[in-house]
Image (cartoon, rainbow over all chains, first blue to last red; front, side, top):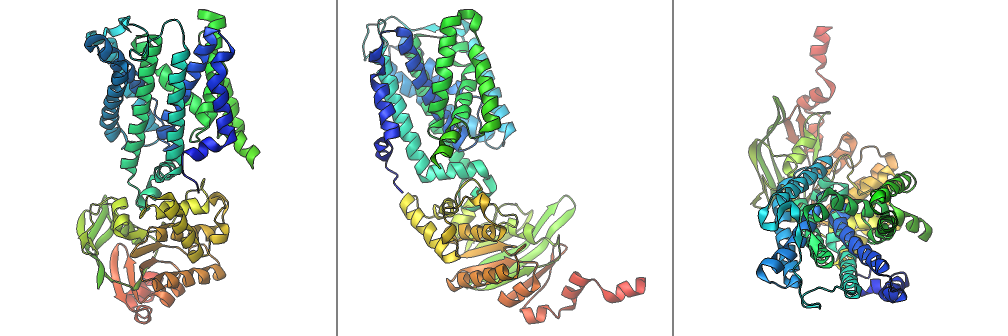
Amino acid sequence: MDTSVFSLLKKPVIWVPLLILLFLPWTSTNIHFHHVLIMFMLFATLSQAWNLIGGFAGQVSFGHATFFGIGAYAALVLLKKYDLSPWVGMLIGGGVSVLVAVVIGYPVFKLKGHYFAISTFAVAEIVERLFNNWDYVEGAIGLPAPVLPEGLINFMWYKTKIPYFYIAFVLFVLVLLLAYKIDRSRMGFYFRAIKQSHEAAEGLGIDTTRYKLIAMVISAFLTAICGGFYAQYILYIDPPSVLSLDISIKMVLIAVLGGAGTIIGPILGAAILIPLSEYSRIFLGGTGKGVDLIVFGALILVISVFQPQGVAGFFKKAGK
Amino acid sequence: MEILRAENLTMKFGSLAAVDNVSLSVRQGEIIGLIGPNGAGKTTFFNCLTGYLAPQNGSIQFNGHPIDGLRPNRICKLGLARTFQIVQVFRDMTTWENVMLGAFCRTSDTRDAYRQALDTLKFTGLYEKRDALVGNLTIADHKRLEISKALATQPRLLMLDEAMAGLNATETNEAIELIKKIRGRGITLIVVEHVMEVIMSISERVVVFDSGKKIAEDVPDKIVKNPRVIEAYLGDYQKEASHA
């Protein structure tokens, strides 16, 4: 079997859409359209990151907003208070997220199934409350980015979204390739084994605790990087926008609708939910808040009845 | 040469001693049969040896290493593999993927593991069904796959927990052939089985459990004549008669 990451890029079903996506922003000058494309890639990447632990390894986390928030706060706090480049801040945020993932993961991985899911949810709620009351990061008021000259060094652009698009595109492709590589390697096999049975996995020499931690750490790092990107893109963050349950749930829903445990699932899920959510917000404004999630909830109901493997399951069927 | 030594193992669940002060020594290359009535503690004993349960008392040495207190994955890496009475196959995966998971125990290279998985499947006779989704296989194939997975981890000692339960006569004979082939590779075996004929035909030594205790250990010919074994399996005729 071919395990090189480039074998994925050789497949026309992969490189043709990627190429189209690459030039898509030039088909329109509409800034909302660019925003939707960026959010699509951001959430596809976030969901891909969640998918490593939640989909492949089957340890469903409802607390990934914590890592997203840490990444976002690390980038902006370090920029604002220490004049540190957002690029470095993003990486430091990733590092902090990894530490948090280990500290949380080690005890929480002793729990299985629902209990694991509930405890991740609880941890994320605690972290959001803490940030809400933490004066150093401006608590509930939120943290605006300082106004700095535009450009790659400061990771800031005001008049155009195109540079953000390409940064998101690179992130999106890199994480896609990484997920593909993991899927095809021993690690991916181990994750899938752990998902099905801890006992059987242990019996084949798989250190289940270690591999769950690895999945969590990679997932947390990538999620934090996305958080850093989000902070630099929106240029303002507060606990509800980066640490709330909404973010965690969105990551889970996208992966589950698209097909948890598949590489293509998070991309399909994001391609459905993000346009739905962004356009309902644009057209309906404040009155339409939550409409996207109502539609999305209905879609999930339909999918779980007819195709429990998510949208990706339909493609699998068609392929056979 | 001694490959496994368990001394004074005791595993209690509350006040029930499922394994009660059992010692066992296994030599390299032999097949040990482990029998006993339902609830005698055979599977519990297996779980203690392979790290799935932590016995309250006793020590286990495998290949010179103390292995009591180690997690199952460490014990497997040291070369002690097992199968489960209720098969623990990965149902959503194909046959080769299941066996490859075992092969990954010794290599991190996907190609190596894939090749080893196919070799193992040829050896166990599942090669033709390598691409089948495991959920669709028969019971006999599941049992065979369970052995294949464990074999792919390249064990020195393989413990089979009722690998033949639920098989018909033909399938049982095929399984016996497979066990003999495995021994032919120099792998030591401990076989738990309900079917007496099977145990008697393949084992060099038979260990009998009853109510958590080891009540006999001998060559098969002598075991079948051992009064304590007969009593454990059939009850004590004379006592029964006097009660009646």
